[in-house]
Image 1: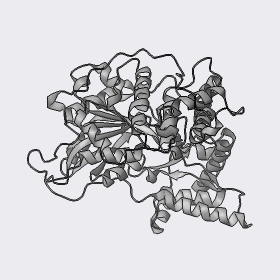
Image 2 (image 1 turned 135 degrees about the vertical axis):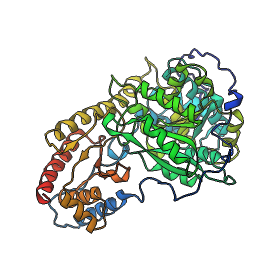
Image 3 (image 1 turned 90 degrees about the horizontal axis):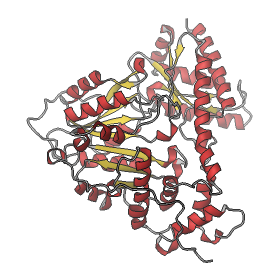
Image 4 (image 1 turned 30 degrees about the vertical axis):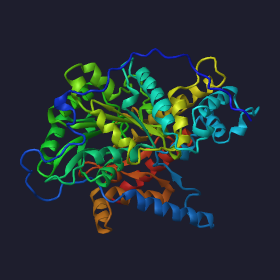
Length: 513
């Protein structure tokens, strides 16, 4: 078996050279790697709110697993299957990674497949190109040079295309093994164990539980800030400023985490809202942590995804050269699957010395190479004229069409029920409808020691076999109840779920009226 020489899969992209990353001295390390003990210590008091705890969804999933076992043993239930309609895992719900990605990965892990007649010719050429960059022609080595040079450079070119030509420096890009581990590394640099008061990170509610957990692991205080449901889950500037001021009573807030597109809320931030957020972090001297892992799942043409980097740069100086931003991308939320553990983050206006930390310690070092080579392919995909181009282009479009269709279907099925409502979903894997539960149901839930939405979801599971996530799993405004509903199911299956849900809800209201 002979590995062919590297072959370029696409013509060279025009590249506007970036200046060396040298932030303004006054802001060089405003958020990252600085001591939190500036000025007098904040007054001590009761511990700050840390968002929802512990995971309400876990109890549901344990019960669902028990029911599945009962069904497998011939148990008598009013349904024949458990339908999981809570997850954001596309692969678990039937959306396989793009075939081209799988073929390239297969060849790179077993080069004897080069020349196989049942594998696409351009997949073989691309795999040969990648193998030529790997140590000993194998993804089994650490291959740090491949990650930091080949992959990072292709990421930089991808970001320039995404952001309309705005420059991206590969030296400011850190490929990583998924975003969770990378966020721990980033926030660990913000933490200061010797400070009088801990550093704080503001995380959105509703939102994934990941961010609060990551902050705690990294040694920070996680403080929640509310999204404005009545404004389509926008980040409300005035309320956020109040939370920052309140946080200073307990800690030194250093980081603002923003999720765009939102999960589970399904919103995509407007440019105006993003500009307000950027202005706020500049005035409050915060590091902006942009979780943009669902950017490939924005499906409403009237509300396209815009990266925080693009909006920041287009706002111009002084903000463009001073606001510190770290943004995250994940392979698992687009073309690939979560099990491949691949992504990257980009640092903007952060002192270059900080980058050294990611190559000397931490989980960001030496990410799995199979995931990285798949990331490289997504960053530099098949081009028009390549045999795999049509199928590769169709893969994400199929997912977006499913999300858009399911979003419309959800609104159609829920709108006839007066006490069920949902903000428009514009992106991401889930919808977050709101439901009204009667006082008797609230009292019964309290008697059982359950959150009201957990009580509802458990009853729904027992009577219909449907698993949806209780809103308390993601956090929600006090006195409100929501459901996290996956939009990644095949449309016929989601329609079945929505019919079961609305029928059950109507009966539930009658039972507890």
